[in-house]
Image (cartoon, rainbow, N blue to C red; front, side):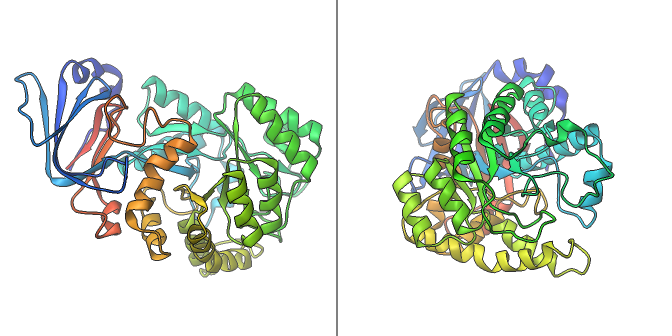
Length: 426
């Protein structure tokens, strides 16, 4: 395997990469515009954009760089709508949260970002961390380090004791610095202040925790955690600042409140009901199911001592329901985005979500479109990413065989180009 992962390549050698056209010969191309596959296609990249797509294998010019993917299936770079690059599941994850400083978190996040990019995910939406995720986004954009294109919410906005309150599980004598709690709100006024702070921090999205959560050290993982007036203040203020809102939500009541208030995406949706489905369709909101996270948490909960005792029953219950709820929503016509909650499971395994989605009844072509075209629409980036089309950024990946026949193929991406630069080739 040849992995072009030296940071200096992106910083110092970009001019040499961009000085020539890159001609990519694709054995099969799933371009992300629809669910079909084209055979024997040439994609031509200049600088960081796709400038031509031609049937057959077009002759290359003498100065062109040629990449031969005639034995592979080529696809747009994948998009994961729900990751947490700053951390990763482990038996001592709560201890790490207390012990690690911001520099530790940032180095871990950069490592996880590289792993994610090498798995074929060229763009991710990072939904909650310490704020190091904002710095990582900026460093990647500047070419200082390597990683996927990141859109981030910075810190999550939660209620006191709610999923996302960083003081959960810590005795009062171990006081956190005030900055650690600046996303914990308890009124409409504090909601507005939190949104304005996120805007000041430079976030791309807002993440709120509309219900309890599985991994927070709290008893109830399903109950609603914001009042309607708080949700109204959060979403109206976010929209004023040009920001969309993603709502973590497992339980039905919190989901309904968030949907009525106007969130763009619901994350997880583990215990949705028929009224939730009706609201999804009325409001045009998207479900980002994260089936892999629910199943992984359930598996980890069966390991003695892996989670806090309050977490175990929540993880077991959610793991049983999350795939079933996705199937119900999909069959009812709810719009589906692709997201995994990476960090709840080991980074780099994101494509296992395709297996779970197809198990639940979604055809693989539709699952791939969810991870490309649909996600680009959610991010308001359809003119830049999400498909292999002329004029779009050259985010291109390849796998060894046909994923429409075998979804597990996506778990072994053998070629990764992001923004016109090749980072992995095998």
